[in-house]
Length: 116
Image 1: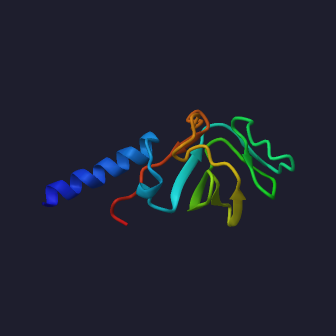
Image 2: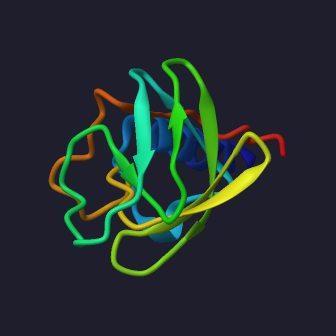
Image 3: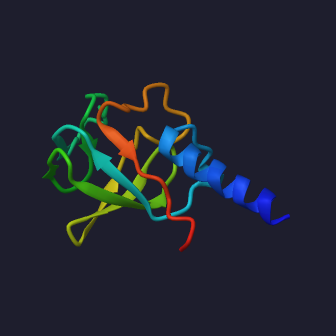
């Protein structure tokens, strides 16, 4: 039984790292590292389609190599993130399940620590 539990936990770690996610399987907070500079912009027209850009009500910049944590999954592909002590409501979180382009060249999901 313990072996089966370890296999399931290892599978979850590999799944988070590989982006093959089901929202029900995510353990929050989920740490995301950006592999390129990512601007966080405001958008008043609802166009959130620029690759490598996050859209929120407040602007900032996440630089290559920095990490943020997704702390809540919202509706319709949105989420709440925590970055440098501030929280941002992000309207489109492309690393979530259901996005055809999960922008893996910008967002790297880090494995969960199974010992927490």
